Length: 253
Image (cartoon, rainbow, N blue to C red; front, side, top):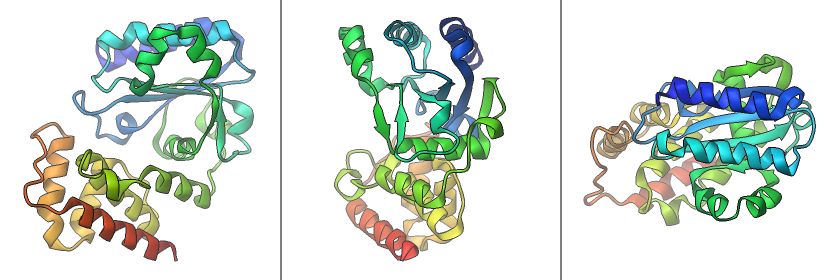
C-alpha cells in the first residue's frame, strides 16, 4: 500500500465507523512537513469528533489500524481522537478519547477491549500536534482546520516540546538521531519562533550552531533520511544534549 492508499483506507473506515460524530481527520507530523521517509517515519493523524466515543467505536477504530499494520511504515501509524470542545477553545493539557501508536501495538493486540477501555486521558504532546496542524496540516476529510483548531498559546507549545526532550541527556545515546534533531527544532522555536520538522531543525542547527557540531548534524540528517546508519564514533552525545538544553533554557529566561 502507498501512503495515499493508507490514508484513503483511514478516511473510509473512520467515516463509516463514526458517522455523524466525525468532525474531521487531519494529517500532521513529518508527512505534512515534507520530511517523511518510509523507513524512518510514522504516519500521524488526528481524528476530531463532536461526542464521546463508545467502546464499540473505539474497538472498531483500533481493529482497523491493526489491519493496516502489515502495510504501514515500519514505525507504524500514530493516531489520537479528541473532542472538538478541547480544540477550540484550546485546553491544556489536552484530553483525548483514544490513542494508538506502535508502542501500544502489543497491548492492543493482546486485549482489545481492555486497551480501548483504558486508553484515554490527558496528553501534553497534543499541543505540539495541534500547532503542526495549524501550521501545515492536511485535511483528509471534514471541516477546515481554522474552523476546528484554535491557536495554541506559545507557553503551552513550549511546555509540550520541552516535555519531549526532558530526558535528552540520559537517553540521547540510545536514540541519537531523534534527540539531536529534536533539540535543534526546540531551540529554533525558542530562539527564532520557527515551527520546524526534525529535518528542518537539523538544517537550522547547521546554520546556527558552532561548526564543531556540523559532522554530528550531517550524520543525524543522513540517518533520518535513511541514507546511512548513524555512527556516533567519538562524539560526546550527552555533552551535546547538555549544551543544547542550556541554550534552550537561556532562550526561555
